[in-house]
Length: 94
Image (cartoon, rainbow, N blue to C red; front, side, top):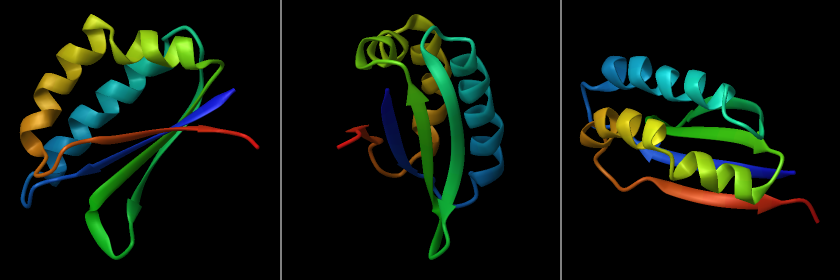
């Protein structure tokens, strides 16, 4: 199993629109092969700093979802709402 940490920083005034679109991404990810679970959090010191932590059976299954046309299409609506590049970290247990 791997965990994927996705960090995004949302531009001011676009928080509501981002919430709506990010839920769509997570809803689609749930049905992706290899997806186990996921949650979205925000930084208490900076509410526009959003973090999504998801669990996947394997890096290959995450990679398949990451490069899927579905995710690319959903992300095309989210990317313009961000004021920084998305940061993705793949985590493995020690």
